[in-house]
Length: 340
Image 1: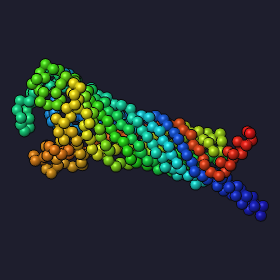
Image 2 (image 1 turned 90 degrees about the horizontal axis):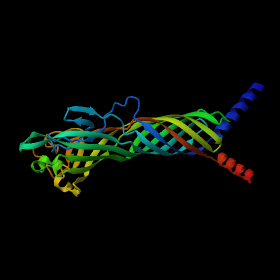
Image 3 (image 1 turned 135 degrees about the horizontal axis):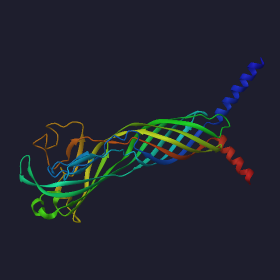
Image 4 (image 1 turned 90 degrees about the vertical axis):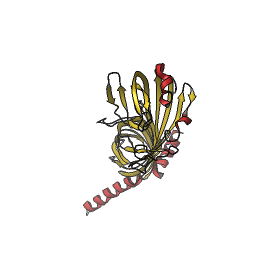
């Protein structure tokens, strides 16, 4: 009989402790992340090719030097960079809870440099015929990303009653809802033959500045964290965690928003086909793409194969978490009265 009473009392104590930890949570955290373990995914960048300057689009970003010649692909992830998360959750009991976070990411900037040999159009085509001039242009490309994602997650805490330091884990889904990529290009041209090649926007002047913006389509990934929490007060915890994410976004569309030559905008001279890009999963003879459809419309955006952008990462976060329950708030008021 005594054993049953003791077991009942122990169970009641555990349940009451768990119930006392019920409540809403508010978490604010920030940190930095790197591409991940493999770092083998390619970064996308604007196509720079004097031999076919009419074929714009996004391609794997590379360092290219036609004088050697040499080519090297740029690897990384747009997940590299600073991230900040604000999350609202509910602890069902002391050990298990759910959370909905909103995360903002500002990626690091990736760059590439290209030395490309200038060409002269020998015949109009199609396809146009070009000949090398033995002169070069220098292109510097920079690309970065920003994004806002929803992150619904489940939370597990390894905290026994009275513990001030305890481990925890979080597993959730990454759902980008807003953001995009920004590519900038700076081109310097050897002006020796400029009068002969000035019909193409690549060669409209000595210096060209270009900006291209890309929007993403609906994508989904997974994320998680393992951390240690220090809880100096019943309603406050300080956290340090290792975070990770697996996410690859799909591009929806791109648009050139700037094409300045020697300080003057020449964007309108490119036309819609060479300014706006609509990304699709398949190209055929009905697509608005000159390589597949002879009757393509220059007054509509160009259809192109959909590229993807890597956002996977591994990093760390430091944060604070507040437990908003009747018990903890009452404890907070009681502590404040004692100080008075």
